Image 1 (cartoon, rainbow, N blue to C red):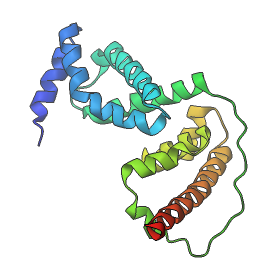
Image 2 (spheres, one colour):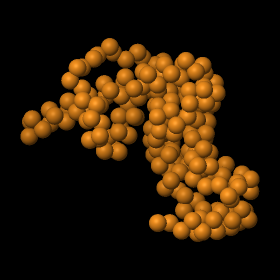
Image 3 (cartoon, rainbow, N blue to C red):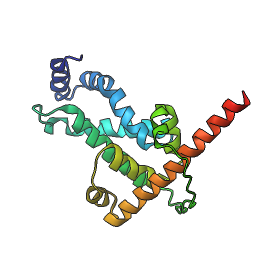
Length: 188
């Protein structure tokens, strides 16, 4: 278990603005911020940009941070907002194609439990960018459709629609993933 007094000391030292303390802060929280960034970025390079931009925002605003509160939710909020900013800045404005109306009665939702993180990350990477963004915001980070709509400057109904489409697409992708996996088992 981590000693929270160590984190409090790191934060207090970082508030002095000295580069040495910022480096300690960066190293201490890098993994946490990178984990969040990887959910929103398609490549590790993009995630690294989000991480670096997030830490720049943290260092600019660290003096405003209330040490009575837990640091991780504050870092998560900054990182998610940075990822949204990154998405807006780099939006490819590709049209979103409608998902096929494929329904497979034999799909077992419990198969999702068998997915490892890397598999799930690859499946999320196959979603159109806006679907992936809204899926992450709603399903993983717990934002409401109202909050998402405000952050992305879209209608709440658009957020709901994109989430529904993302879930449908994910079902199809998971199904295909397990079909390919089963085909490989049969061949070997």
